[in-house]
Amino acid sequence: MIEKFQTIESKINIPITYFLMGILWIAVILIMVVIGVVFNLIYNNFRPFIENDLGIFFTILIALLLLMFCCIALIVALTYRKKQKIRKAIVDEKGVTFYNHRNAIIETILYHELQPAQHSSTDVHVFNTQTVKYGKTTLQVYLKNKAGEIMPSTVDFNFNLVILRNQYQLYRHFLKGIQHFRPDLKISQQAIDQYNLSSEPQKTKFGIFEYIMSAVFILIAAGLVYVFILLIKMFV
Image (cartoon, rainbow, N blue to C red):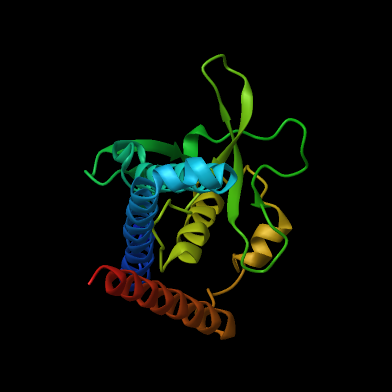
């Protein structure tokens, strides 16, 4: 009896994701407070600045505009186009399906749609945007576009503002699906080695890098809270 191909769903690392979102929203609040302080400074000292030091006035005005731009950019990044942002992925016997926060399908990459590469020795390979160990990693496959041309496409489990705790397993399971359902496609040796396709999966460990990053995030959060408290004391 052939064992049924398992279904794997992405799992959000809730503590780290919420912590990251919290830091970003705290940054937005702090920038808004600083904008208020700078605006109040300009309002109360408008005439002295104009009469005595026009250079400082324009410097403060430019700083105010930059702060407003940063604040708007952060808010837009956190709230804009939520319907098109991927929040969940499911890898099953058909391929991978991506969903938004309302559980509506955004994109699907199915095994039967995958095409052999025309100008590459492998049909599926790992693509790294950085050379460091913890850089962003995606898979590159080939699909037909609407014109019937075979073009490279990306399988990406790096979601915006969401940290997954089973990203490695998702990539590995998708590759195992290609091995199982599309044995005609050649997977690069780098992908085979990186995702242990010829052996049992390795258990992911919380290493030194993760401890350092956690400590950095905690220090950043503490620093933001401290600055926020100082700003509040200025008006009390």
